[in-house]
Length: 593
Image (cartoon, rainbow, N blue to C red):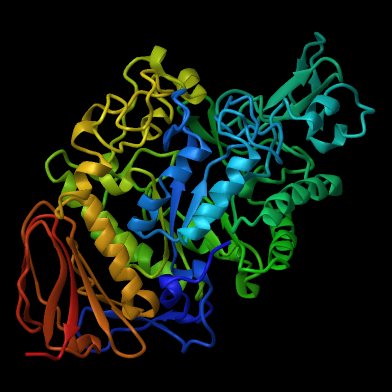
């Protein structure tokens, strides 16, 4: 478990459950709005302001030379993770699996896949992570198992099998010709019907994802008992919690009604459906409340992170458990970060929504993960990519949030999408080519150094995915040596986040709200410390006037803490500030002259 350390200052700040509201402008024409929080009632839990680092184990570090990353490889790199400043690592699945979906099809929830190591290797990783002041969060897949899981092998053998009802079955429909058809129009997210026929039982089973990933029947209490027992196995070993995969999809409509058709087709060529009968059903929350109660029975503030893709910010609030706060501590807020372009007005609106519509709950902001094109490529313009990446980092690490980093994001790894279908490893890319090219591009090996053609990831010339060609310059070793790199920008931001009371516990005040090019906000600590964040999200120079006094903020002097792409001299807060294209500026507000 996590041991006391220099991070103790991070653990003693304002409470997570303070009520928020967006204030009206404090003066006519001020162009500012404040987000205020109530006074803290108790020390916040460790995760409240944490930086969580996602590790995709196949691609992080190979210690055995087989071209696939493993647990001992993660252990080897803990010193780097501590130097970066992360509080916890989330490790994508490493359980035994046929690897159809690279570990998200689990055949045994209480063991380690041999290609990743052994339970002894995991216990060593957990112990070493504690010595490096890093907690370990595991990925847990509750929606489905592998079709090679013993439960499903039994379930598919006979309708009278004791575990047949562990999965979602239907007799389907029969045409007058005698041909068997699925019971409804539901489609798999990975292409084709969501129903697979099994002759041995003369029934169809439901699979929201690949056909090799049959959905569990959470209406059967024995399923909950079995899955909770698997989670207890890891909690008893000392993990800090779980990231819950596809958690909004545990239940399906018991009547198996057809989904409303929206028109058009998706990347797989299937009709677009509304998905009101397979996602976000009320029963999901009943399970999560019971899971949270189980998690809370363990010491050490264990954590539940949720994969929660929603259409609107307000839809995240129920996943916290609403006013009870008895479900997920950190549902992923992907709305801010997973867009296709940066836009100051949109980001301002989403950040304000996260403060106002989540009613004091702490957002977990996400820009990058293993399922989406990297932010470097989504937001980059081919000219200012490095500057834009610094804006993304500043926004992620100075907002009022817990922050999720994905391996390689901190050094500017790019998305290396295959150009030929024969090179694709991700099944969704194979079935969806060319409209859907899969997720290989964001899963390429971590780039550590230029010591070999595998970027220090492996000694094998045949890594499971090829290393990106730019590894000679974009790697941890090279960037560590240069203070001006993206890696060191991340390190300084994380260190500032830890040391600043304003960034740990401060309220948020939006400034210059009508500006369509520049996002500006202040973080104001209860004791008065104020940090200003200014992000020019445009390719043109901009001039801003801050009007701090009109926003109710004290201070007459701005002292630069971080600036990109060029230094910004200390200045009088009343004077206009000139910003370069895609400038990121973090400054302390003071009364010094």
